Image (cartoon, rainbow, N blue to C red; front, side, top):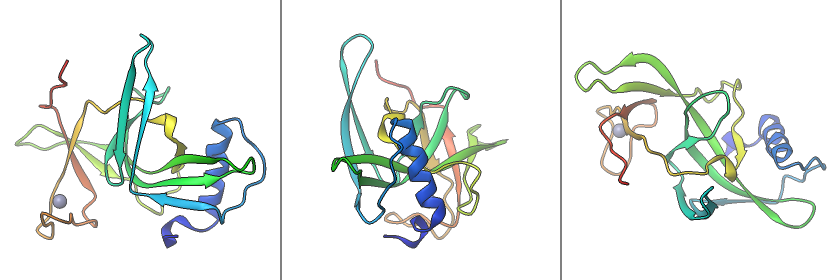
Length: 168
Ligand SMILES: [Zn+2]
């Protein structure tokens, strides 16, 4: 298990994530599995189904009641075995917050990834928090250390593209 995900904060977050599912039993934490990719179907109000695909590293749009649109980068996809012996899937998020500034040239909104020591926001959520494909597109504000294969993870700034049109 990556060291970032271990420790008391992680366990507390997972307990909260189960509360969203109405499950409040004590948890064992040695029954975790990690995945790089998940796909699932969500039923639409009109009866149709939408297929959702999420990879670790993707930036997803999260359904929240308070805010119009919340965005998070998927840090991990985990399956946890609950004490009913079933596995439940969860996302581990790094939240993005709007910096209140825009890139002058592109007029894109600038977002920054949550500081990893900032425990203001919980990190673990059941996968039903991502119930639609994002209509926004984020680009890394690349540094000179970024390469085609690997972005510089110390540069935590992203541009939200306003020029991305959803196909209908
Ligand atoms: Zn980059």
